[in-house]
Image (cartoon, rainbow, N blue to C red; front, top):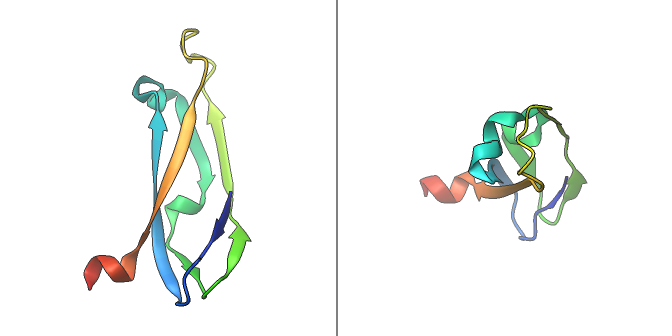
Amino acid sequence: VYGRNRTDNTMVGQAIPSGTPGQAARHFKKTECFCFTEQQFTAGEGRDMPLLFMVDPELPDEIEVLTLAYTFFDKHKLVN
């Protein structure tokens, strides 16, 4: 996963994952994820961040597509 701070300021943030369809969530296991810890980016910095996951073989056959998305929250803006 690649992330970039598009602002002119240092940012400390946390990524919050979401996945669809919802019934697939119990079959999706993240083993390493940048979302487990805060991320600090200097102004304009971009970098690759780790994401490793497994999909349980018991995933129902009718689920053909899994979508994993992240929303990145600037923690400074949340408390100010």
